[in-house]
Image 1 (cartoon, rainbow, N blue to C red):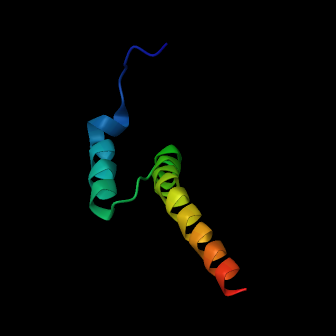
Image 2 (cartoon, rainbow, N blue to C red):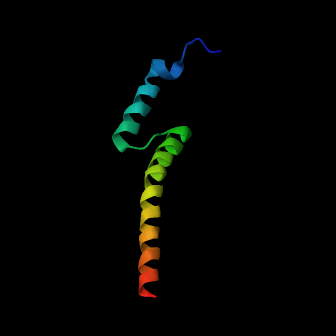
Length: 64
């Protein structure tokens, strides 16, 4: 278990710089952050797409 140690990246300000860049561009720089952001977007998109598909099926059934 890591109880916190010395970090050259924090000392040199690399961690803060990456954090500022990430917030400014709106895209996480870590792989897990990008996956989390994509998962949130798709989680919201799936119910919307299912309603659209249902409406299209109903319209096609009415027309035929």
